[in-house]
Image (cartoon, rainbow, N blue to C red; front, side):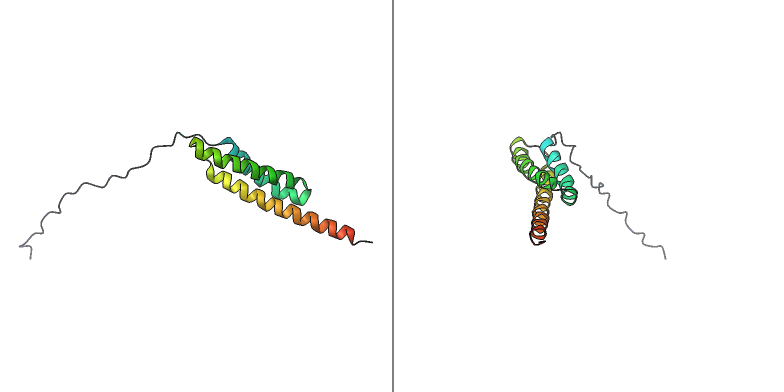
Length: 109
């Protein structure tokens, strides 16, 4: 029954997992500002038309942040893109709400 013992398994070294070292690159402050402005802009559209200004500011700071992250090798490109997207949504919602309010006020008489 146990006449032929199985040969020992070849000893192979365990694969070492290599992790990237933590990045020393700075996060772009403008990317953070763009994201924050984009997040704040949409609720402000519903409260007042101040969301238009915040949305436009989010788009402008996001574009500047995207250029700087590429040129200066900084982190925060995704935050800048999200700021641009949220700022664009806020801008579109603000313009649409403003147009609907203007249309309803015009047709009241």
